Length: 286
Image (tube, rainbow, N blue to C red; front, side, top):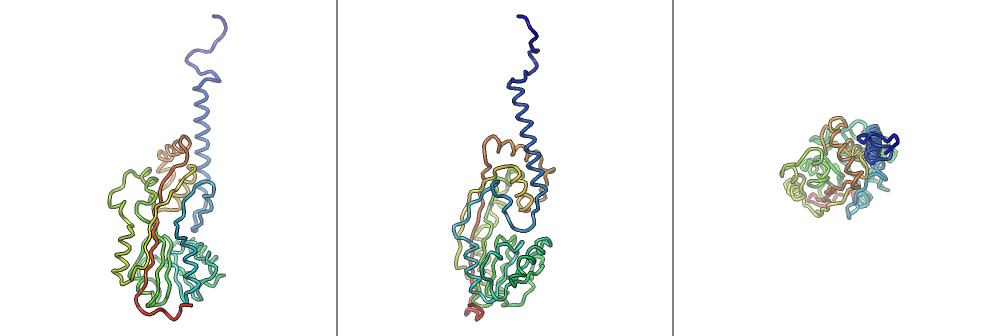
């Protein structure tokens, strides 16, 4: 055969090896761009709009924000513990005449203040450790969405007789499919933490009567690696100490998995708990 063919051990421009190399380079470029974008995004507040089109999560059937707003409209004095950036509390059309929110992280304190002060609500910088900086029986309603820790004795103390605690919380092994991708298998004790039954027991031990307790597991999808990075930067207790550099191998392998198989699927755990302090209802209720 005549002619100047390329050596057999070198890929031609149209060979599968060349195509594979080009595809790999494009994937790496997408990885770098997505991670850089997510690493630069602000994680202040508790607004998840950055995830639009990049991650999805089923919502619990009970509609926490709507139910919270209904209770706020009937309360005389209300407290929102660990308000984050105040976004959930501010979503209520009507606030109690006296509404106070606590928050520990300084950027969130500033964000919540800007959002809630125009609504007549006070924001108190608090360490999220007992005691709460309020008098006994100061509130007829206490609410909290996704508290890191629930200090039941303090909630019972600041509630007026007949007052209510209303909260949506993170349940056991929430999004552990993602957690274990980075940290490996968790222990039975870790997987069983934040059990709704334990919350009931703790509420009752503090002298409260649990009037409602519901739990659901909900599908979560991460559509690209940027969504994973932003999620782990924002929800810091999922993978404590998370940084891109510290978990670069896991991020690269997860990026490849998403590109080859589609969205990474995990399941969040949520429970709703409502508890009442015994006694006649507060005269502050409307």
